[in-house]
Length: 154
Image 1: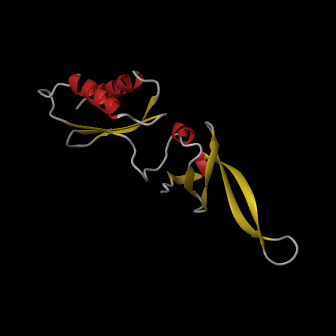
Image 2: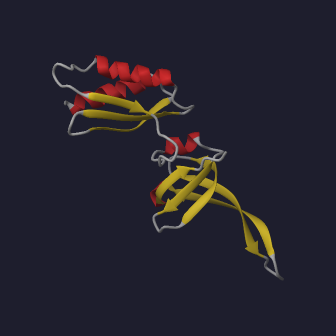
Image 3: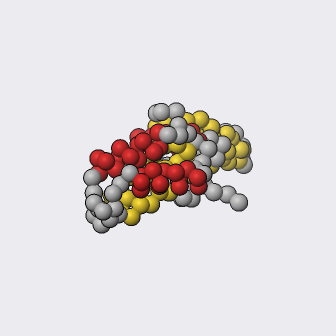
């Protein structure tokens, strides 16, 4: 399997729709091509079919028999690109940092360097007994994040 050709076809197929972006792709030793794509507004099934057909129609099965899988990230799939954080503004993120600290909060902003989370927590009062609810906001650089997933609530 010519990985350069496959990479070029994947990039061409995705470039046809500026709202889409490539998360990952790979070719296994047994010639299974796996492509993971996402979109700023989600990934319609029509786009999965279009990408799949474009790639399949431009590869020769006589030359190399292959399996092709085009999919979008599922629930619980870790975020890897800044664009994924941006599309999830307003949703709850569970992040494990490199030092194993865990953060959970609403994504209120995201740029090319990091993500800003907001959450409420209960902390002891400065004076006297009891606790008070306080709002926290923290920007975390992507380089500090070991794993981040969107928390799905029903």
